[in-house]
Structure formats: structure tokens, C-alpha cells
Image (cartoon, rainbow, N blue to C red):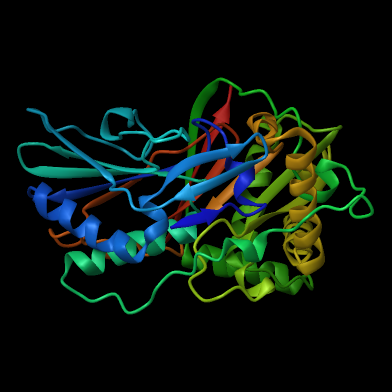
Length: 375
């Protein structure tokens, strides 16, 4: 089976950037052979996960299905104390977007009493929602449940062709991306904070009292902006705050669409403005940017990405990136449900934290937020 890439998928066509990497920690030792069998059974349904890249031309890439997931294992004699953002490389078999190489891998690390299972998932295959659906299905298979829903691999639904008369916007105006991409900053200190459900509720009420109706996500993005905007390099003398918006429902995509269906909401502030504005006004502008992700803006973005591909070829995406403060919210994904045969995980670690990225994770009574401050 051959799966074409959508206009959005091409944005993630580059070697080692944009890999989604998660590590789950379990008490006891995982059966490696059983995990391999469960993965094989899962990718019979999630065929895209068992794909390899095939480059058709300088302008086209497809996914060829029918390949296994790479599963490796190792044992260590100590009991490592892995926190969410310490060095995690040794717990992962990272993927790259190279031909004839797996786009999903699993590495099992057995300690004397525990198992760490590290997944590396190429963003070319899909977004966080797609990856979680795959993991959730793997969990069901591991508990001998039948998979009743099949993912939709109809990526042609997101293919938008550029014509000479369409979309004269520049790349940033249409997509929120820039070329060349921002230079990678050295990684500096790790900043963390937690917010309880009550604190989130109080801030939403404070905004509502000022006539602004916002979500928890808006609150957390505004809090990240308030705390860390000074560490984000300006773009054209503006501070950008960005959040990916899932547009499956906006475009009416089939249930279970598997691929990349995200459009960054872009909130733009003058330098110094975030500091001077009251909290509710920062949150309101972020809410307005998210509401601005509509069918027209999505269509324009997809058309502009197609124009870039047809003008400059697929290699152009090696040098496209996003300026500003990035926010990724994983708090709605129930990671505690991922049972691979040893019950609920006793730990969950995200291993893709880059400079300028604020990561929102689930916690017992609210959320935990982590920001890797650029040097």
C-alpha cells in the first residue's frame, strides 16, 4: 500500500528534527517477544506506522507500508533515576526520515526491577493525536482487546494544489513558518511550574470578570508567555506565541484521521507588550489567535506549503521553521492508560523538549508545565 503525503506532512520532511519521543516506566519486566507480537498485530490496523519513506522525485515523497517496527532491548545493572527532562537518549532508538529506515522504533531498557519503554515516532507519520491513538490501540491489543476502529489514511484530503492565481501571501503570513528557520539556541536552564485545577479555575474566573472567556489552555499559554517571553528571540521586532490547533473537526475530516492535521495559532505581541498588559488581555489575544484558525486560514496554509514544495522541491523543508514561543499541550492525553502488559506506567517522560518549547503535562491535581529556556 502506498500513502501520499499531504501538504501539511511535507512540513515535517527533514532528517532528525520533529520526532515525537515518549518513555514509559513500568514496575517489573516486559516480555519483549510479546511486545513485538502486539506491535505486529497493531500495525495491521495502523498500516501507516509500518511505513518507510520512498522519494519519488525532487518534489514528491510517499509512504510504503508493510514493514515491521524496530524493537530493541538492553539491560542495565543499576536503577537509573530518570526525570522528565534529564538525558534520555540512551532510553531511545531515535528515528530519522531516511529511505528504507523505520519511522517508529521501540527500545526496552530492563533494570533489575523495572522496564523503560522508549518510543520514537517520526512526525512525518502524524501529529501527537495520531501517535496517541496508535499507543492507545497498542495498549488495547496488549490487554487482548479487539480493535474496533480503523484509522483513516486519506491524506489526499489535505492535499491542496497551488495555482499561479492563488495565495500570494508570504510564507509567514500564510503558515506561521519562516525560511530560513530560526537558528538553534544552546539549551540552558530548565524551568518548571505546576498549576492546580483550583488555580486554573481562579484565573479563568478572573478573566471572565474582565469580560474574557478563555480555556485552561489559553490560561497556561498566557502564563508561559508572562513568565518566559523575555527568553524568546523576537521575529521582526515582535514576540510570537504559538500553539498547534487540531483542525480535524474544522475541515470535517473522517473520524480517526491519521496524519498531521494541525495549524499553529499565532498570537503576536510588540516587544515589551506581554510584560505591560494585564494577564486577561494576554489570554484574550491568545484566545483570539486560536479562534482565527478557521477553514480559510487552513486552506491558505496548505496551498502555500504546496507552492513552496513545487517552487523549491522537498529539500526546501529542511530549512523551514517556526519562530517564537512554542506550546504543546499533552495534558488531555491519558498517558496512565498505556498498559503494555505490566499495568499502568509508574512514570511517563517526554523526551522531545527543545529550546523555546513549553510543554504542558498531566499531573495528579492539575498540570505540570516545563520550559527549556534558550541560552
